[in-house]
Structures are given as C-alpha cells and as structure tokens.
Image: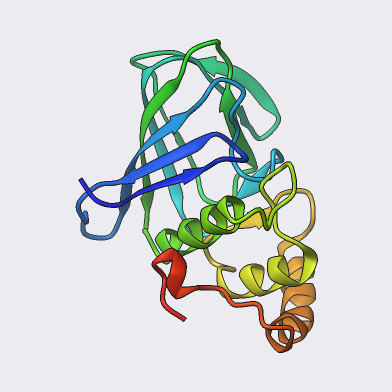
Length: 180
C-alpha cells in the first residue's frame, strides 16, 4: 500500500496502491456526508474511471442519471462523461478506484488535498480562482468541470494561470509530496 491522503473538507481519503502499469489505483473512502472535490459534476477528458464498492453506500451521478451503488457494485465511467460521487449513507463508504491512463492524477490529488488540509479551499474543497487556474492549466488532461465547454476552460486557465504563477501559486508543492 502506498501513501495515504486525507481531505478534511470533503471527507475523502485515498490510499494509493502499488503502481499498476498504465493506471492509477487507490482505495477510496468517504466519511458520512463526504463528497468528491467540488461537489459538482466533473469529467476526465481522456481517462476511464472504474469503481468497485466494498462497503457503505456511494451516491453516483453519471451524465445526469443518479443512483446508489452498494457493496459488490462495479461500474465504469467513460472518458469525457460528466459525473460525481458522494457518500449516500450513514456509514463510511469504501471502494477501489482505478483510472486509465493514470496520467498525473496522483500529484493533482496531493495538491488538492494538501490545500484543503492547510485551509486554502472553500467548503467544496476548491481553492481560490488563481490557484484553481494554475491547477486547471497543469492538469487539463486529468480533470475539468462539466457544464463549461473544455475549450473555454482551457482558454481561461491558460490566460489566467500565468497571473497565478506570478502570485506564487503552483500546480505542485514539495510540502504535499509533489515537488515544485
């Protein structure tokens, strides 16, 4: 088992598994009331995401369709498909998650969760606009918000990220494990 990250804002915990060629695998835990960062639908532009629910109840919204996954449920979310997840029960939810290809999601999670631990995010687990622009620009292949066309997000991020960098924001920080 690899490094464990905790997000006190969203109630998420990720325990990275040993490297799987071409994929990022981790044990995913959501506390009661927990949710995926942002509380809104997002997409992985070129990654497929697979879930295997082991315990608890996982609320799922995929392309507008909401349902609850219970222990034993396995499902996949195709790339570029709007989705989000949350704990839909009174107990902790545990699942195994795999993203293919893995790309740079590990340092993305390290940064997002580290910012949350340092009190640098809002109640949804999102950092301020300049930090978010730097992250959106650096991790454009890994993550985007749903509902706003990706070309528009990329244009906004690429024009705003330089201001964020001048202000001292980075996509990775050594203190969170991602190097600078």
